[in-house]
Image 1 (cartoon, rainbow, N blue to C red):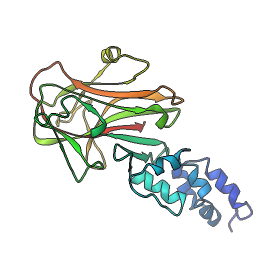
Image 2: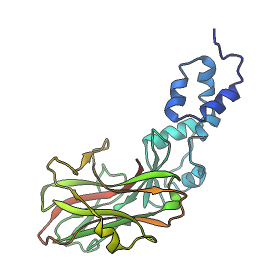
Image 3: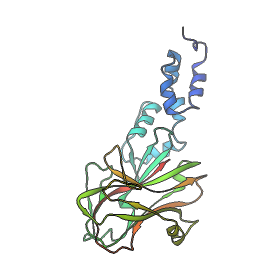
Length: 259
């Protein structure tokens, strides 16, 4: 007997909306009543950010889903491109919080517009139309930023460089990385606490991890987004002191993702 059959479905939907996407999905196995309630738009709209309609309206592709559950699952599994491909957006599967990747084209890359040093090319495994392909430099410096108002509030974020290393790469060893609130901390202050990361293809501490999409990522730093009122947050990766040739780095973008 369904022990929950006398409980109004709307009440169950309200309860499930206070849980998590994972818990809501599991609840379907409890009873027929829960299964029906777990499909409700009331439940799944609660897992979408409050400004999801504005975000979806900026998508480069039409976003037309018959239910909020289908929209949620699409954003969990398939990032969408926004603002002409400048950004990608998705939702974290565990928390439902916002994830953004800033495309390589939106990064500030030293010598990025000089074909002798960097080449812009298409890769079918990239979510963006172009990636930055490092041919030859003596030093490199790249920055990416995002407005904290776009991010989920009261959330700790980690910033990752998303990249690949081409065959025949050279000189890609240690670099300094840091994340700062632009209006609160100067570049010089942030550089003093920069962490040393490595984009070498050799495994080891503070090195890259392979992502499910086949790309590599390395942590550049983290920050806490409180009320989204701290202006722009910037992540920077730089290697400007050891002057020797470097090449073979392929950059897709920088991802701002909940911890």
